[in-house]
Image (cartoon, rainbow, N blue to C red; front, side, top):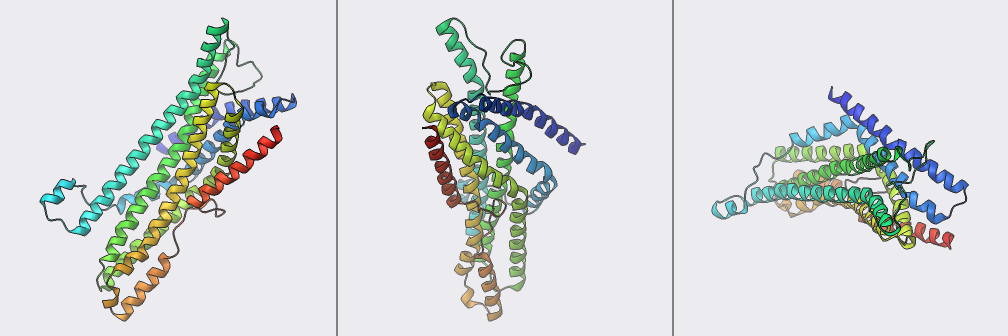
Length: 370
């Protein structure tokens, strides 16, 4: 029953959103046919791109929903059975240092995820409200200045009827508000799930590092830690399979979106629209930066296993045990990564390349405009 409801919701949102996207694309086609300037076309261009990105990201989760549920269940199974204790408790009770480290890692993971989700939600609410209020504000200013105003919409669209006339305008405005909500929920909802996956995987890698650092000369303990390490590697691969294709499109679309937003900011004289595009640009930069940041987080945390083993008193162990540790160190030198369909690894270096590519597109647009 739940699966049917999810399918129903996905397709309803898809139809609701892409009726507006079709209107935007038809509007762009009409402007090109009419020989309009690059400035007029570029104002509309970011919105179909961001709608396409939202659809691709939502579709990737919808198609791989069973894999996503499997990862969630596995993370729930292996979650450490430790209560989060206040720091004052450590001062009044003798708690082993490794237990204290575990508790602090778990607590910090929950706090970081909570803060990211709050910031993300506030940002989405702000951008949606801004884009939906700007046309109304512009209409109010025009009416106050000239005594009349044209009906405006958040997005520029064309249909077989005139959406800028009564009685179509109120319904179309509500339609556009709904589209804004759907797009940003699609993007940041799927990203929020990825952030949670990455944070909890990092938490498990850090706890595993603590266990390796305190490992004694015991083959059974070593075997258990190796199995846990393999589980974490498999979970990272599962997350990679879920998000791989959508992250590739994310990089491509974000490069063009950042370019168009920057181009529009330099040309638009309307303060309200400039501020809206500036906010849109900052949200796009934030979104792609966070993907690269969390991808980098997974890579760094997975390679710390080798450092933890090196801190262990391996030199006191038996030769066979040393060889086993050496194999684990060699494996940990190969980081677990999240990639965009294996074309690019998501890390902070990738973010700088995306900015460089966007700047190249921006410079090309400016040259064409001149």
